[in-house]
Amino acid sequence: MPAAHGMRARSRGVFALGLLLLAGCFTVDARLEPDGSGTIEMEYVPGPHATIESETARFTSPHVTVQELAPREVGAFLRARFDDVTKLPTAEGFSILTITRDRKRGEERLRIVVRNSEPKEIAQETRPGPHITITLPGRVVAANRDAEIEGQRVSWRVPLREYARRSLFMLSVRYATSSRPARSAT
Image (cartoon, rainbow, N blue to C red):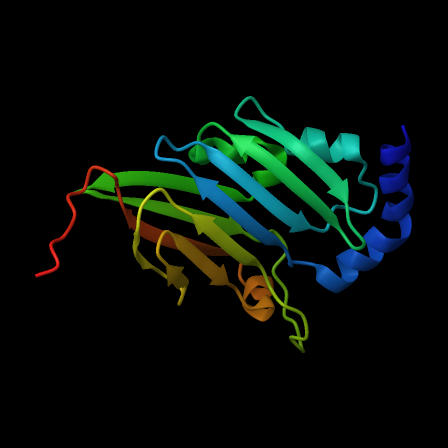
């Protein structure tokens, strides 16, 4: 299969170089629906011997369906659907995550814990770290870690130095649910 061969051939050179240059760097853009289902798009650097087939298998589970996986100049692009965001980690490729949702008084809280299995110190931070953006089914009320908030979107930029040296970090966002009454503008 040409696409798989292309990814395998690139994995020997570009992906190996990418792992060294971009270790810890990934970009996520996700959309969460009111029922907890949604989509995720991610640009990341696969392992040095990755193929389209092996990466598709890594990001697939009974709760996660890969819709697209394509090599990029450096790294790969993934688009997937999930039926329950809390079950995203059932796919091996997302197993570094622990995700919880809870609802209280017209708001919902989404917590994402990201584990870094190989913490290390970085002398110079010349590359960007992880960038995670989520579009939620309601207006964002609050988020941690100096997140950028714009309506229903929240975005975190984690400095590479911080991501690299910590064994885990948590992202948390609270947003209004559709059942919450609108506040009057008086």
